[in-house]
Image (tube, rainbow over the protein chains, first blue to last red):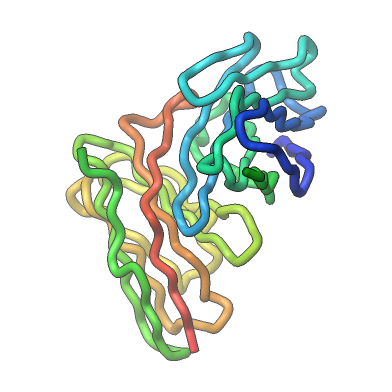
Length: 111
Length: 115
């Protein structure tokens, strides 16, 4: 399974934008890039996913590098509720449907 | 609407005992997944069901672990002869169908402690 690399932790101030990076240099052409987050004492929650083009939804934006070897999850205005572990996951283009989680980035949001 | 529910929320058992963990997926979701999460780690895939059948059980650590989904809805994860190393949060997720772009919805998990 293709591997992702994320910083262990990041800090942000409330109401400021947050850019969470993810490196996936061994990504293959059919791998989708998924982001999930896990708030304290909860199960993971889907955030966004993409293949090649940048994506926007109500929660966040996903910027994918042209060579697809890296991506950035963008939270436009961080709130205290956004404090969580953020996981960048590659989903292979084959038959598997499992998510392979790494250790993620722990985001702290300061008021 | 109701999300994925898991029971019990906490389970404490003794080494060597048998436990069952239950997952109620979102109604109408055909795909169901089990993961487990140890402290400080990301969730680790165990098994995936499409309907009643286990489509991928490659994550089950050994033959003490077994899961069923007899009617294509509720699933039970069964652990025999529990060991202290089985202590973890067991997470269940479901999705409308299986597919690369399909969102998985997770339950709150069952925290299993083996003494």
